[in-house]
Length: 141
Image 1: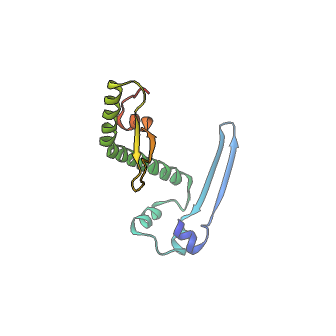
Image 2: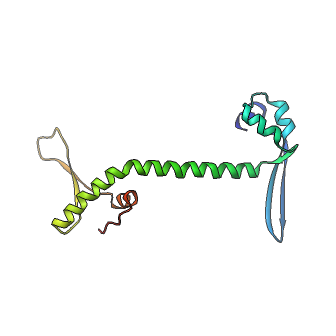
Image 3: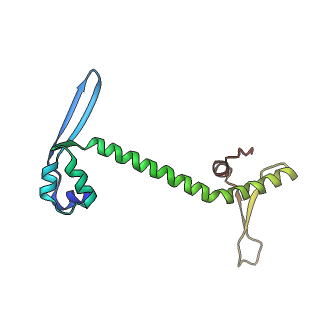
């Protein structure tokens, strides 16, 4: 649809808005024939799906399906990314656990800055909430 709009302009159709006791509804009706006649660069799969549509079809269900698919892709990517960080998260958790067993207090990260003659460093805190999310272990601060 983006390519169609870019090369041919907005698709031919109508917008139908209804309001009744059941609520509000919106339909964006698109002309299948106009899409097929004005644009010849639909891919095989898209053209085949487009030809199966009614002469005038509602775009909203297709947009809803797209949002659902993108949401599922996002959830899958989150899962893959979290699994990638789990090993590091468990390692950081083991450092926190070791520090808490030896002493009380919150462990920190010291970063020494090279190249300076004096002892120059920065103090940072362990990302406790992120480590908990990645590992599934509740860490008490």
